[in-house]
Structure formats: C-alpha cells, structure tokens
Image (cartoon, rainbow, N blue to C red; front, side):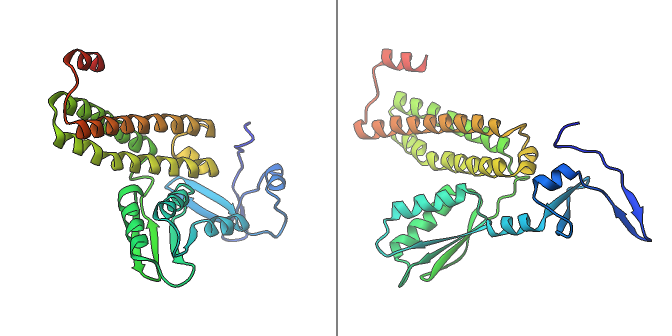
Length: 257
C-alpha cells in the first residue's frame, strides 16, 4: 500500500456519529497530537479533505499580500514586484503608499499591468491611498493545459503573421503582431502562477493532472520557449517597422523552410 493512501473502515458510534481512524505514521509526520483540531471539507461530489487547523490558518494567511511603494519607486520596478506576487499565488494584493499617496504615473502603470499582464486580475478598489487587486480566475474555467494550448496557438500565429508581414511589407500586420505579445505573456504568467500553486499543494497538483512536481518543471521550460517564439516574432515585426522593406526573395524562402 502506498504511503499516500490508506484504506479505513467507517465506524458508527453513539446515536448519530461516524468515525474514521487516522494512520499513526501520518499523524506523527504532521506533528499532530491528541486534542488537536482538524477541519473536514467536501472536495467536489466524491472526496473529503482533512486539514489540520494550524495548516489551514497558515494557508489563509498566505492568500493576501501587501506591496508598499514609495514616491521614488520606478514604475517598472513596481510592476516587477506586482508580477512576482501574482506568480506566488496570492488571491488579493494590496498596493499601498509608504507615505503620502500613490503618484498618478504609478497608478496608471499598476492598472495597465493588471489589464495587460495578470490574467484573472481585477481591481476592486482604486484611490490615491491604495489599489486592491483580486485574482478571480477559476482553475476549473481555465486549466493549465487549456492555457498552454491557447498560448502556443497565439505564439505560432504571431510568428506566421510576422513572416507574412515581412513578405508583403505589411506594416499594419506587423503592428498587430506586436500588440499580440501582451496576450502571450498573460497566458505565460497565468501558467507559471498555477504551476507554483501546484508545487506547494499536493491536492492541486493532482487536480491539474500532474503525477509529480517534476512535470511542472517540464511545463515551465516549454512555456519559456513559447515566450521566446513570441519575442522573436515581435523582433521581426519591429525590424520591419524600422526599415520598412522586405528581405530578398531567396532569403525569405530559406526562412520559411
């Protein structure tokens, strides 16, 4: 029998209670003892989840993050810190000024990042005293596999359109390629966030369809390569906009091959 799975028989005691014993080894490994509290919750239609109260408290504390910024903080640095908290799986991110108030440029940079980079991110409050962001996306609505396929499709389309734009010297199409890059990044950021959550939570790991955490690393490497494909397409489009001329026909044929 795997050390991750045990079979137990449900017992009936008293007039209305059912009890199930827990494996002694598991109790010891989790540092539990007689008298400790646990929470039992339903997971879907056919599963029960048992969580020590201390772990549940620790988990709930990790759902909210506070990002304090000062008047002198660079907009790009603020966005990088915001994206990092998104990667870490926080459901609510509060952005507050260390003193005084948020500057107009800082607020605009944050709102643009939420809209263009953080999939599922919604601003639920916005003022000079702070911005609160909540991540609303549901794992069941957009699986990692689904996001991965959509990201791959977008990147392939970008590369195809970039080459077509060069072939036809189509500047408008080149601009569309550049605009599509944000959407590829959004899917990439979302996948990385979900992989981070899966690595930290064995139940979520199984719900996402992974056998072990090592598979998450494989997904991360592939996502990075897809991002590079999108980046290369953008570079091709930018070169066309800068030089405004196509490449030689023989060179184009080699690129397409």
